[in-house]
Length: 358
Image (cartoon, rainbow, N blue to C red; front, side):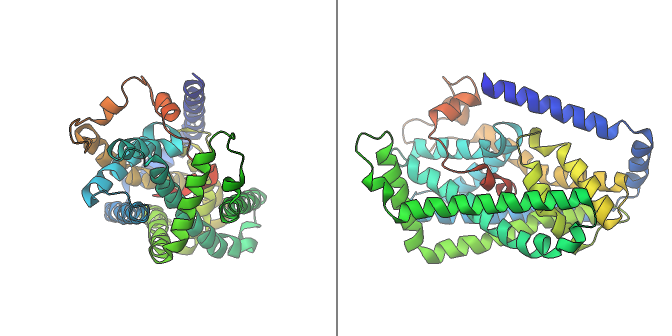
């Protein structure tokens, strides 16, 4: 019930924001004129660049599955990743796809749910590492550029606080695992066994540092592809922002739009583009809005592919070939999936990247 209320609130905010944005007649007319002159070749290139981001995400998650010794084929990994994109778009927010991926793989690998959860968490954390690095170079490195506008400066400081909090949280979790705090807990503490298993999984990633490093490097490919998608969308319209400007604002846009304010960040992302590109790059409001909407639409193309795969997915369980719908029976809603699945030991700070792919 709480999840339904939150979704209803997000939907309401999304509708209000979009109505507010498009209620200006002059703005709508300007968008129509700009859209008619769009270069569709750049939009098609954007779809291809977004595909590179999806492919890098599949490769990265498969590496973490192999580290956790979860037997899964390339095709199965691809299926679940694409379905996850679809669920991230429409249902449980930023972790909707993660819940589905864990649920399906746990069905095929009984007793390995914690390891599967850790593969997903590691996937998110590697994306966070790439975000922190890129934001430090392109966004924080242009502090003077952002402080030209008070609103942009405030967004920059929010991003800085968000990243610092996220990094400290991740560092604390690794420190707890490193010190063996879970093993020292009294046996009567609820979930002690799970904490111990989580600590062992952290150590497993540390010992398999070569594939972990490889996955981290792939995260940069995925993040650059995600930002490149919006750059291609920007080049489809005139005037268009520079590559440096787009890569500078995207960490701010991604982090703020990933907050649980509106569905898929719709409305929030558009106002951020309008404010940042308008005040810092001199891009007209109608063009900035089109860049945001086109970039989102280009990314959604791959979520639609996941929607096409979803009805045909079947569990690999030997005697029970169940679809995802069968797995969800008895829950009656995706809220039930969240209740039945183990809590994801991650923070909201990790969610902005996977979107990405993030």
